[in-house]
Image (cartoon, rainbow, N blue to C red; front, side, top):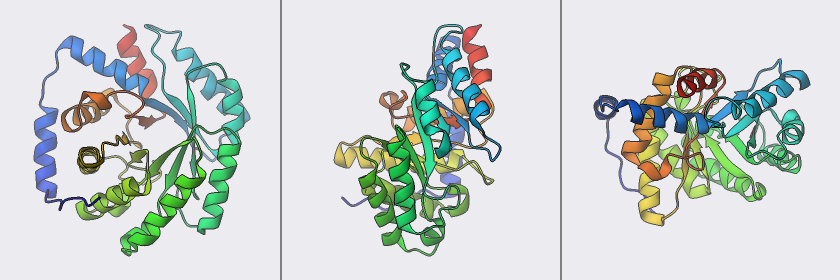
Amino acid sequence: MNFSSYTKTADDLRHQIQWIDNVILNETEVLDAYRTIFNCIDLTSLEATDNNESIELLCQKALDYKNVGDGTAVAAVCVYMPFVRQSKTHLNGSVLQVATVACSFPSGQIPLELKLAEVRWAVSEGADEIDMVISRGSMIARDFDLVFNEIKAVKEVCGNAHLKVILETGELKSVELIRKASEIALLAGADFLKTSTGKINPAATPDAVVVMLDTIHEFYQKTGKKAGLKPAGGIADPESALLYYKLVKNIVGDEWLNNRLFRIGASRLADKVKALISN
């Protein structure tokens, strides 16, 4: 398929975001929104200091959330590859998914053969979801075929694991490149578009998310295939998460407001949202 020419400017995006953010939700709608947001969180720990003990605590925290308040659970835990098997074992019998990052996260700077080896290993360890980083240097150099071929090759070795493609929009910067990277990822087989690694600033931004959602929407209109969205990085307060919820609702619609098509990557957000929905 061919995508249409994307004409929105940075100013257009800001005006659209402001308009959507000004939509007022009543008390019941806000509470429902926060329940959905909580159920779409990928509870994340991607630190150099992670170890078996800290990941055990992360997994137990994810399980314990379901026993608090109305029983709403998070969607998944997201951990480095060495902790995939441990996480799968700890979460066995629950609905929680195990996601991991791959392809030389966060830089993406290793040969494709090694990226594929990482993904194969993660899948063999039991990963349900692979969050891969694209080659931003190649994207910026406009070597679009290389970026497409890498994503396509990774998708082919994912097996039954879902593929989230991290664009690292804070490095792509321009509307044009974020749009192009979104198109490439979807055409190459991405199940989700993800904004960021969370390792640079800016991480997730509403501007980038609007571009990504517009691309997801057009892809669905032309192919009938629904791809998901995952803003990640720096989303630490419920109000920020609520804006992303509103953007999804207004641009692609209510069908995307579930954890099959909407995720939020966060480490500090869950406790705050759980407190709001448990009162």
